[in-house]
Length: 172
Image (cartoon, rainbow, N blue to C red):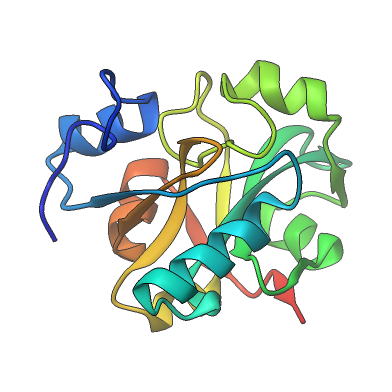
C-alpha cells in the first residue's frame, strides 16, 4: 500500500490521515460518494462494487459511554455488516455496562461528525477496542475522518495508532 497524505481531490489531510502519515504507517485513502444516511452501508456497497472489497473488511467506528467500574467514553470498531454487542464491549473495556454515546458527545470528543468518526486522530484519545474479526484480514477499512472517506490499513497498525485491544465485540 502506498502512503498518501491527502484524500484525492482534497487540499488538506484529515486528522486521521495525518496520524497515519505522522506515524509512518502504510495506508491507502479511498474516497467515494455518500448521501446523508447509512454511511457504513454506503462504504461497503461502493467499495465492494467498485473495488471488489469484501464487506467484512469495512469497519464502522462507534463511540460508547461506559458505566460502573470504568466510566467515560470509549471507541468500538466493528464490521459494518454486523452490530455492536454492548455487553461484550463493556467487558472488553473493563466497564460494568456500555451504551451508545450521545451523538453530540461523540462529535465533541472525537472532533468528527457522526458518519465520519474515525478511530484515528481523535481530538481526545479514548480507550479503543476493535472486533477480533479484524485480525483475520491483511488490511481493513475505517473512516478517514469524513463522510465518504475511508483509510485502508493493517489491523495491527490501527491497534498501534489507537492503543486498541482486540475482542469479540461484534455480532451478526
